[in-house]
Length: 171
Image 1 (cartoon, rainbow, N blue to C red):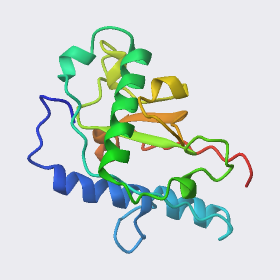
Image 2 (cartoon, rainbow, N blue to C red; image 1 turned 90 degrees about the vertical axis):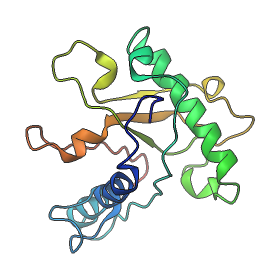
Image 3 (tube, helix red, strand yellow; image 1 turned 120 degrees about the vertical axis):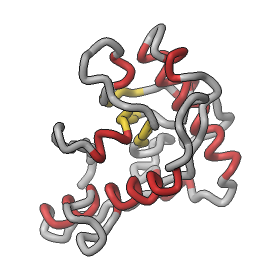
Image 4 (cartoon, rainbow, N blue to C red; image 1 turned 135 degrees about the vertical axis):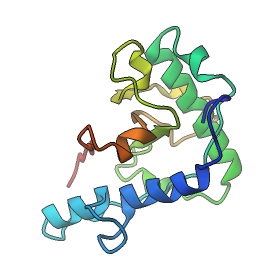
């Protein structure tokens, strides 16, 4: 969320996000990211993960729409990661650094703002990027490097295809 996000549907949105990434076909009317990769790998790949509660960044959507897209999204990533670690002290960090390189394998930031199909604001679109550990705003890792920035609306859109990117170094 941003400081000006409509948070009235966060509980419903959280359930939808969890199902989009990790739901069983019995729960959703399409393949989730996890079920798609499990099925397409003939059962040899099982993607797991967690979906955190909503984090609210301290700036409005109009404030982050100006300036550097890369800098703004990396700053938000660092703030969200710091908030997550502080609010989830029992989180098993090592379970999400499979190659033990000191970085989380991948982080998806699903932002609560409509995507911008007009192209007027590049920040309200979807993309993948990498951050440096110095940008993570946390004292110790694992840090976030690879991250995906995507609008919640992409998960629900009927006019745009749904897409997710997954990178696997050692299948």
